[in-house]
Amino acid sequence: MSKVLIIEDDPPYRKIYKRKFEVSDYTVEVAENGVEGLEKMHSFMPDIVFVDLMMPKMDGFQVLDGAKADPKIQHIPIVVLTNLSTSDDAAKVMQKGAVAVIVKSDTEPNDIVVKAGEILAGKQA
Amino acid sequence: MFTILLGIIFVLQIRARGRALALADAVTEDLQIERDNIAALHKKDEAILASLGEGLVVVDRFGKIELTNAAAARILGVTQEGMIGKSALSVMRATDDKGQPIPDEKRPFERALKQKEAVTTRLNYVRKDGKHIPVKLNVAPILLRDQVIGTIAVFSDISKELQLERMKDEFLSVASHELRTPMGAIRANLAMILGGDYGKVNKDLVEPLTDMKDSTVRLVELVNDLLNVARIESGRMQFILSDFPIAEAVRGVVANLAPLGKEKGVHISFAKDKVDATVQADSDKLKQVLTNLIGNSLKFTDEGSIIIDIQPQKNAVEVTVVDTGIGITPDDQNKLFNKFKQITSAQAGKPAGTGLGLYISREIVRKMGGDMWIKSSTPGKGSTFAFTLPLDASPNALAAKKSLDQETTANPDQK
Image 1 (spheres, chains in turn cyan, orange):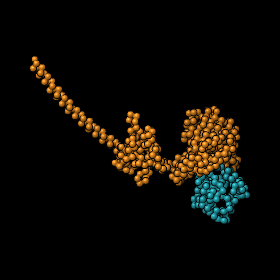
Image 2 (spheres, rainbow over the protein chains, first blue to last red):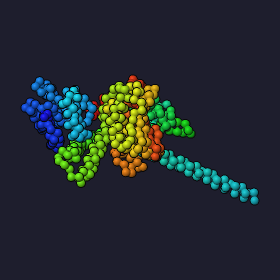
Image 3 (cartoon, chains in turn red, purple):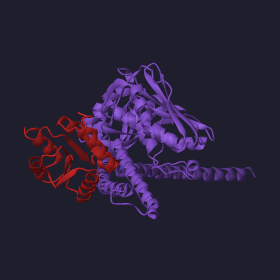
Image 4 (cartoon, chains in turn brown, blue):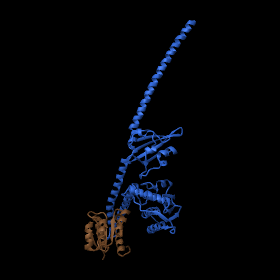
């Protein structure tokens, strides 16, 4: 079973993604902010990470910076979840090493699991 | 007898002279009253001009300022005396909404003078200290026996109005983002419940849950559209222009939407996917526009086809979307691109949209140097929508790039 880490401060979304990945046969771990997220990337060693952009303490941009600068976890693919659907942010997170950007309000949870499957299967680098 | 006659004549003469003198006195008195009246009127005119909240400038046919008022001097940051006799174009330096100087021949004063047209516009007046004052301006030619003898301009400082507009835009933008988060959560939960992720759904509940989900999707779309309108109108929509083959983009969108058409029994196809033309555009925005146009056609087409075609022109390509749908009456065609206008004839039994899609699409295309219009439409037969995009390195492409760059500079907080 693949392991997924969800870093998301909004409780409803946290529950939604946790449930969706669980019923899709993933082992799921959640974090409520960026600091906890980076810690769990080390302790849980997920196969893929989904991170929200706007979070207290440490936001998604900082999580990307932190993860990509850390040799132990820099190989883990990170997908950014956001409700700020701007090309600007998308370009910025891709530049920082994210593998994909997903706009939450325009996407159904199923699409996100499908995306995770594609990335893990190596269809998208 | 003769003496009596002379006497009578004498008396009459004296009386006549008296009357003449009295008349002269009366005329003098009338003239004085008239003079007083004129002076009073003049004072009154001066008082009216001084009290007028709007700036007023009257210019002669050579473009020299003849008359002005206190508000004009205040807005322009000069003295009234300092304006009289000077050239209006030089005393009242003007820039457009992007802060670029307006060429003399395009200045409203010149247009009113040379083309005899009344102009209502917004522009900035530049004060001596370099400060730009946004004004709303009306300039009209002054006609005397069909000859233009000058122009009259009335203008008001709209700094406060613009500030309010900006606050409205910001509010809309923040509110939209804050609304999207909970709506997205509702939508995601409903999708999962319906998808069986929380166990089997009682079949009586499938319909109401589906309605709830569809309504939430519509709400999300409405909020997205509102956000887009706010961005476009405040110059805060970001465009990332690049040069790419138009056929490739169209092919992708058609492939995405073809399955939706198939579900409905409508064949969506791309007529000429071999056309070799490179356009300059924001490819994501082009896809958004195409998706909106084809989606609209699909909404109002129950059988037949939707065909997308490309016609290369001299400096642009024209993209057409031809459907065999319900068509649009000529009356409704005029309203179609207005904000929030949904045409009545199309609404019966059809899924409602926000009424913003076509407005947004046309604005996006215009920002990229193209345009959008209804090419033809016949009720009961179908419609043809068309839009253009500039070819790479064409004059329109360069102009659009320049204009969007200026917008980026003016609004660094683009989203």
